[in-house]
Length: 413
Image (tube, rainbow, N blue to C red; front, side, top):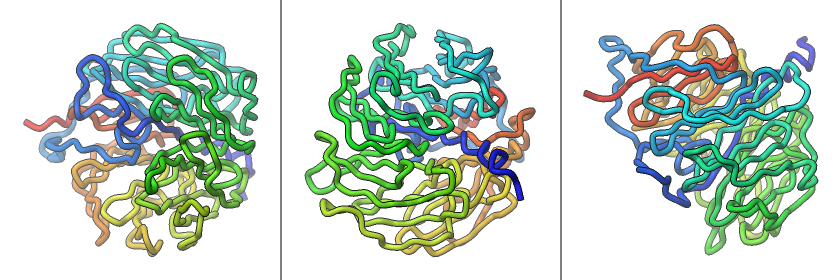
């Protein structure tokens, strides 16, 4: 049996993170193919981008550029021609802004990130909204930058400034911009003014669970769903009033996958053999619809597409790609030889990064796994290749824990 310390080191892919669901246009020529936040424009892991190539056997993706961005699991955000990510080196975390087309550095900001350990590097994905970009380090250092210059607009520290108790292995939440507020699932759900960082409201007193919040509508109300150490919880976005929560115990308190919302239904999943559940959300609280072990998301969560959930079932380097029915939890198919990585969906296709470093395109369909294209070992070196790939503007961006970031050209002709 593996020692817990060995098992625990895999949780860090949780970029696990979030931002606004389409609350503001990106300054400086926004385009429909931008990917400005964790899980994309609508916070659901789905891109509306079409026309990108999958004829890779005859015409493999061309490497446009590579860059070193330090250790970590931070996926990239792309907005207005600029790319943002984070990494760790020499005792410091660094926020990078690169030219999305060339990989050239536009600006960066470094700051001390505490005592190094084997779980090195940031987990969150930068959040871009308007002319600002927000980042959160594992020690709770929260920054708001002007997105084109890197000038600090404001900054805060969650433990010292807001009394949020850090989880055992550091903060992993990607902030959610909602209206005038920046929302962070820091154990308690916290809302700060997105413009100056002042506290708007604070709800609860739990410990974070490495997940990121999601906003959704229920009737005339805007609600926020989170997944912390205690379990799934929902609050009202207006002032943080609790709507409901459910005790969901996972080994080591690792609830890292973001909730998946469809109407008044909320899906959650955890690794370490814990499993998954679907809840009906109402102003009266959370009601279990089903619960089973058919999907056990360890780090990255699932993406919902046409009634089915696609994700990795089981621990990193052990669990495989799987598909289950959203409303019943019934298994549809599994592909055990594709081990834990990250995925998104675009044009009805899965874009998958496997733990072997292979970039794979497959059909997002419930009737079986159908591989459409594969580029082998687009990432090499560091074996922790679990960060979600990102498609934006006909390029797919991939990174590994060691900090290798690559841009691949899949633009249609």
